[in-house]
Length: 212
Image (cartoon, rainbow, N blue to C red; front, side, top):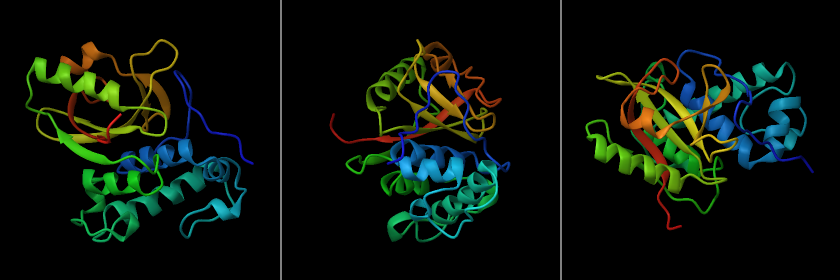
């Protein structure tokens, strides 16, 4: 039996392998966190039964991770998403759409009992962002991470994976451009100065909407 894959404050994980796969990388990490056999395959190239999609067993961890990013993108951006669910197709050059990410989380990248939804909050004021941050802390649990879309004042440009806090952090975030687990402080969130992957403004979240 494969050992669970865990991430905590300051840990390193595989980073995104292209400029447009931050969402795919975050979703791949989410799947690794709930599927130990899949994580073992990504990390060591073993457990052929764990792979999902036409991806190679050989090569390095980064090569397997890169290959699986493309498997994820082929689902999140297609007209038929994860679980063969109908969705709006989206150009891969524009990254991962929230609706495709939602289906991916509900199809093996999170607790099967989770029920994900998309929330937009770019134009909320400080109080609204404080409520959003509190809700994010309450909803993120083991097996039920969230995808956070961040950007500038005009557009969302980057996607990160939000996880329960460890090591004294307020919220853990897998930052795919570096592969590091960093902090997501409440103050930085409500003041729109996140400095996550070079982006400051929180735009939207794909989070678990099921009752606690």
